[in-house]
Amino acid sequence: MERPRIALLNAAHKAADTRRNFRRELDADLVEFDCPAGEVPETLRYDGFVVTGSSASVYWDREWIGRLKTWVGAAIEAGLPALGVCYGHQLLADVMGGRVEAMDEYEIGYRTVEQDGQNRLLDGLGMDFTVFTTHSDRVVEAPPGATVFARNDYGIHGFRKNGVFAVQFHPEYDMETAETVTKGKAGDIDEETIQQVLDGIDAEQYRAACEAKQLFDNFLDYVVETQTERAAPS
Image (tube, rainbow, N blue to C red; front, top):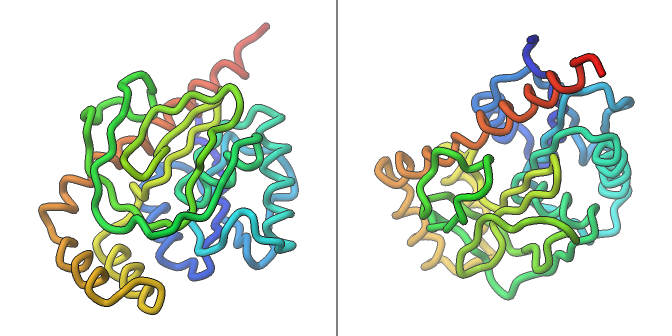
């Protein structure tokens, strides 16, 4: 079986770190699209797709967000496996009928998330695991028919509906990205909180968070299985 061909829908306004992180973690042939610049795939001829994080909100009235939602909706309808991360998690929820709202605060820094142990995306992870988070919007209602498989005190951190998987946290982050993103919140978050988060970005926490990177391989395994099923004679 050939390496899966994945559409990487890069929704980040500063795309370089996002590109680097996902290209490092996804062992697939990635075709990247700069979504804030208005790029989306012209076809659905991919084995799956990934929607990245972003500083945007899914409820903003922006032409590029509407264009992205339209393509994602068509891809889901066509049965393409999907993985959403942070903003991608929220966008997939919104497209499929869930509800996303602004929070009164940021969740930022290394946090603990609990899983139910029933979802293959998190196979190989502990029931409680460490992740890096940074978001001020959240999914308050998962899409109808979806299964919520991960949570913490801030709410839903993972859901699945059919071949669509989504996580609120950032398994792709390296320490450099975590530091850059945290420093970029100056003006939105008080200096004391920012410094506390920066103090917590260390090798020990990062090693713990690397456990969650397993979900990328789990997702690609699912994509390959889907390829095989489609290729099998009826």
